[in-house]
Length: 140
Image (cartoon, rainbow, N blue to C red; front, side, top):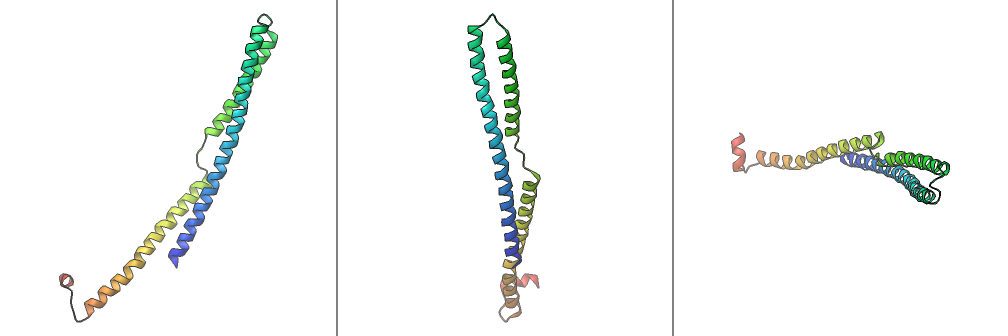
């Protein structure tokens, strides 16, 4: 019975870990999409800047404003890109993994003990009976 409870705890811990991991991956995807949108904006502004440089290469005010906006978009894209790349497991994920491992280790130990008991009782019954096993004579 203890093994079943430990396996249930391990399964619940694994579900908790998977939920935390899915939430983290969802945040990464959202940050990645925002970074992608700003990267597209950077590319569009780079095109506009090139066009303005070719069209108006003597007048500097519109190009300077475009370059400032381009720099701001690039910084924003870099920030969201860094947030999307950051992928360390959170506290809840680590704790759920620890609980799952402990429960599985305890379940393995309990199952081992449960498997040994019938073998040990069989051996003890044979030893006390009339017919002796040759390999048991060494232990007398």
